[in-house]
Length: 157
Image 1 (cartoon, rainbow, N blue to C red):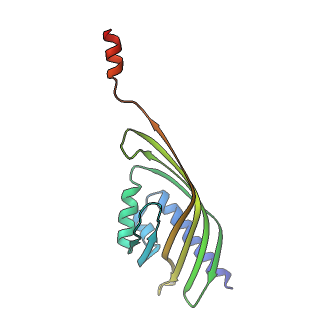
Image 2 (cartoon, rainbow, N blue to C red; image 1 turned 180 degrees about the horizontal axis):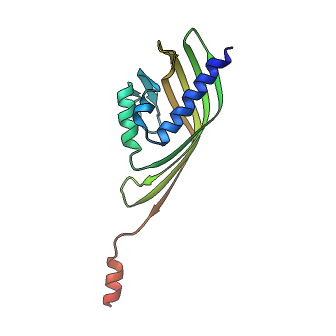
Image 3 (tube, one colour; image 1 turned 135 degrees about the vertical axis):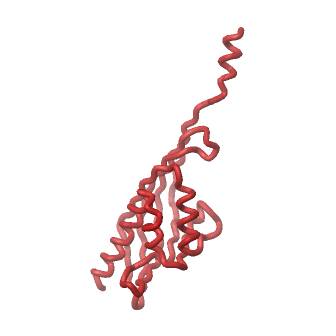
């Protein structure tokens, strides 16, 4: 077991979370291989394929949201030369508008990232396949009734 390679993968994942939450999309995209796959069945039935599609879709989906992602307890296994796989326990919280725009929503989830990594010719590890499996997701919505006609009708009586 090469602990330096495992530490490099841990650093890759730390940057993944930081760049995601700070919306540094170009840097975040560079953490993936060109042909990477992002599979998140709870969000979409079809995996995203390719770095460009991953960055475009995720950045659009998180626009206007505050996000906090944490990864814990990595299980990283080095495979054949230049390949590895890992499982990370995860927690995330997202704050932003409700889908209809009439309120604010808080999403809080727990689960695991199941990932495959490839070491590039430049010596950098990158994510080749990311599968996010949620064990639990809480959604809390805060809405404001913007229809004030009831008040107007009441005052007219």
